[in-house]
Image: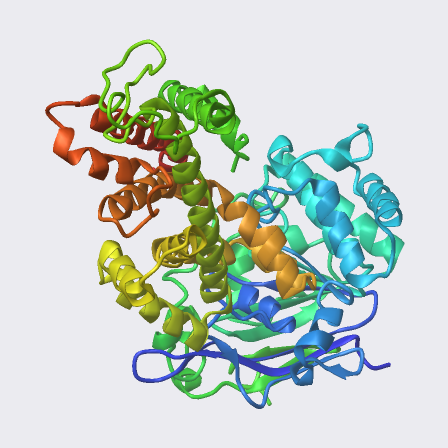
Length: 323
Length: 280
C-alpha cells in the first residue's frame, strides 16, 4: 500500500546573511491512511515549518528547495498550480493552528467561517452549508446551545474556539488533518478534552493525523508512530510504544528523561543542557553532539542511519558501533 | 481580541465624539433641508439698498455686498462643501484601501512599485499637487474638483492599510484561511478588509476635515468652486474688502468651516481613541 502522504528530503531555505539557511533540512517521513504520526521536537526544530510546507505556505522569503518531494495520494504537491493547490488545501489536508485566540477571524461569526470553508470546496447553497455547519458544531461538542452558529469568536472561550477550529478544519472532510500544537495554548483540563475530541473525530472519520507537539506526554497515547525532530532533521522515528520503551537516539532519551513520571523511584528530572542551536549555527556532523551526554569523536561527521528494529530508525553513531 | 462596537456607537460613547456627532448631524440636516426653507442664495433682491445689511429680521446673518442672504449662502455652501468632502474622501479611501490591500497582500515588485510611488507623491505638498493639476485644467467643474481632491488624498491611507495588512497577514486566522483553501478574493474582502475597517474609519473621518479645509482654501484662491455657486472659501474671499465694515459676511462662513472641521475631527478622534488604546 502506498502511503497517503510521502515527504522525501524536504528542505526549506531562507536567504541568510551570506549563506542560505535551511531550518528544515532533509526531512523524510510518510503517513498511511488512517494513521496518526506525531512530530515531536523543541521550539525551533522546524516542526511548524514542516507542516506549513505540506500545503506550500512557507512564509516569505523562505522557499521549498529543489530536490524536495511531497506526494499526497499520488499527487505531487510541489508541481501543482495555484488553483489545484487550493483544491488540496482544506479539501484534502485540513489544518489546526496552535493559538485559538488568533486563528479565527474576529469579524465573522463562527458559523460563517465554517460555512465559507464548505462553500469554498463544495457547490452547495447557503442553507445547505448552514445545515452542515450546524452538524459540525454538534460533532465538535458545541451544539448544546442554540444560536452558537451566530456567535462571534470573542464570545467563546479558548477551548470552544479550538473546537470551532476543528469544525472548520473538518468542514471539507479532509483525508489528513495537520494539528500544529493544537492544545499548547489551552489549560491542562481543556487540553485533555480537545485531545479526546481529536481522537474521537479521527476514528469516526477515518482520517490520518499529523500531530505536532513539543510535549511527548501529549502524543503518548494518541499516535501510532512518533518522529523526533531536532535542528531541522528527524533524528529518530519509531512506533510510539517502542519509542517510549526503548528510545534509541540520545536526544530522545534526553527528552524522555526530562518528563516527570508517576511510577517508579523518585529521581530528579534531567534537563538536556544547552538549547537548540539556530539554523545558521548548526554544528557539523550530528547536530545534537554538543549537547549529547554520550558524545564520541566520530560525532562531528555525518551520523549513519541505523535501524535497531522493525519500522524504526535513528540517525546516530551509537547504534552503528556494533555493526 | 475583542470585536469593537460599530462606528457611530463608538463615537457616541465618547463625550467629545458625541458633541461632534450632534454638530455634524445638525449641519447635515441644515444642508439637506435649509435651501428649501431659506431665500435663494443667488438672488440679489436689492443691490443698491439691501447690500451689507447687518443681522436682523428677514436676514438672520445679514446680507453680503450683492445683497444676498448670508445664512442662505452658508447653508447652501454647507451642501457643496460637505458633498465635495464626501465625494473626494470616498474616492481617496477606496483608492487608498485598494492600493494598500494590493501592496500589502500581494507584495513583491508590485508592493515596491506602489510604495515608491506613494513616497514620491507624499514628498510633494498636497495643495501644490492640486494647484498644478488645476492649473493644467483651467476650468474646474465641481465633479472634476472632487476627482482631483480625491486622487491626491489616498497616499497616506494606502500606507496605513498596507501596514495593517502586513500585520494581519502574519496572523493565524489569515494563514489558517489560506491553509484551508480560501481564494485570494475571499482573504482580501472577508479577512483583511473588515479587519482594517476600524483604523480606516478613523482615518477617513479625519480626512473629511482635511478636505473641507482644502476645498475652502482652493475656493478662497478662486480655484475651487466657481462663483456664483456659494462655497465657504469663496464667500470669505468675496467678503475680504468688508471684513471691518461688515464682519458678519466673513465670520459666518468662517465659523461654519470651524464647526464642520472641528466636529468631524471630534468624531474621528473618538473612533481612533480605542484603537490607540488597544495598541498601547
